[in-house]
Length: 82
Image 1 (cartoon, rainbow, N blue to C red):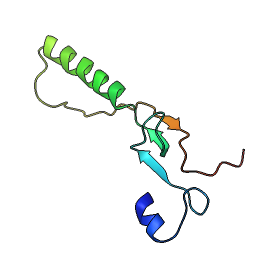
Image 2 (image 1 turned 90 degrees about the vertical axis):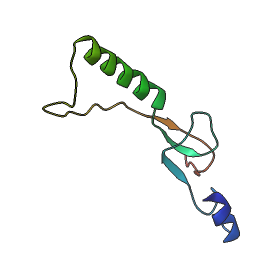
Image 3 (image 1 turned 180 degrees about the horizontal axis):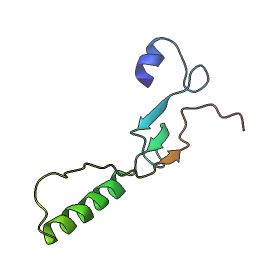
Image 4 (image 1 turned 120 degrees about the horizontal axis):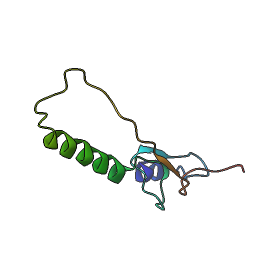
């Protein structure tokens, strides 16, 4: 994306900001949300191991969802006013 914007003679973040939703890395150059994939994987394994230990096989009769919060990576691709 940033290379494409450069070819259009647009500078990041001076002319346009770039945000990664879910693909930013903490401490990385791109501003955006780090989805905490490691935490998600750890929780998935805990659930799977628990189900195997209880002898629960197959899908859930009543599927459910879990949410794990992400973290904001400030990055360098937004022009912050503060």
